Image (cartoon, rainbow, N blue to C red; front, top):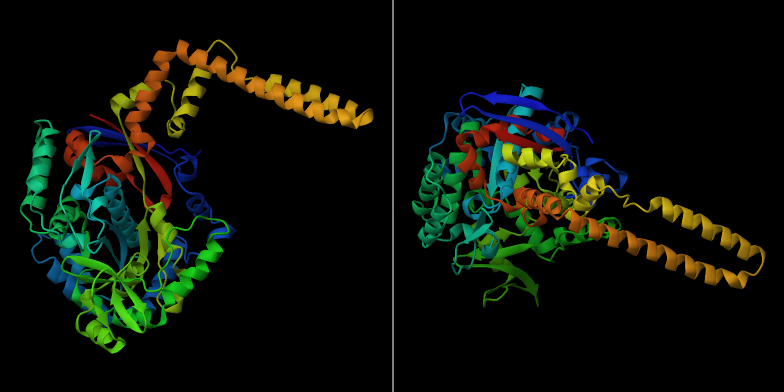
Length: 549
């Protein structure tokens, strides 16, 4: 395990100190075989990605994207983003980055996320900070170019149940609403009830007042979920120049028209991804299976699959039917009515942005890796894929508990039963490891098997059966003894279980369960600056941040 230490004192943030250490993603036990193999650059995964996320990889990527991204696309991108952000209070830095998009030496690094209520899980912050810090790393490495962090809002998703809640202090706060169509267009009416429930979970501190203000201004003073999310992300990250993009835009989709026609007629994504999946599934689980047409029809209140049957284009679950000529004319007139699914959205992103890198979680990067050959078939550069930063935040009190229990940083990631058994064995005055006895038993039966081979081979079956019985009995005795010791050290077991349950809610990573508000209530305005200071996206390691007032 690789551990690094660094300690900062932030005098301007209520004298809050924090220390940071890291462990390898591969050592946490929370990342898939594919992601671990990707980080290790193993041969089995190399054909499914392009340039690797290091400085040499970015140097190659800049050259590739420079050749393919046109000034016309830059102008459309600038105009659309200018219009989308007209009601935002952009920071001077965001204004600067927005203007830089017209410069042929400007490139983006992008992360995307659903419009989860009040950001949803904590890793929303880590994704965006990864993009902010990667852009800064690239500015230092390539001073002749400009680099802009971008957050892509998944406004066209239609799975409202995935985004309509957030967890605070172990309680699920849910927005109960019947929704159809793209979630970005959903009206924010009814969120006052969510606010009132959230307010009850907070204390009376200044930090809590700021959270209430942030929720109110985001969700109670904007008409749609898109507008609310755009405002919230800007308020949290505007000081770092973050640009926020909404793909549900006719101007941006006009750039995608040639690719959408190709998708509707040639079905390239289905063909290429199907071939890639056959190769991938030899070693890895498949994340997404392609459809023959990977597009939705989008209108007010509906987002339904487009299918091709009997020579006609049909919109699933509706009476809408088009001839090819009618459908292509509609696409030319109203590209906003065509919505990419999970396999085409990455192509959309790379067509409209001068993008070098997509930053995402393990599941996201897994489906991106299904797309490399598809990108090649439509002559669009495949971006660098970067696993976002992951973080475990530990308070001073939690750190003291871990120290008292002699639980190390790597150990806290163990499965709970494994951690408990390890610590009970450590403090017990009995030897609860029968490895030596098993070895002695095994040696004895090996001698019996040799004797059987030399005398009567029919005796071998009885020896093997007895060997299995004795070893199973040894396992049962060891488990019974361990259970007895757990009862003896019940208080220790409870303390270990309690600390791990707090740091890993529902036996999952903290960042996938908790909402940022829990930590903002405790650490206030210092939370985001600390993350920006600590997280190093190209380090490719899991961060553990210890906080102390």
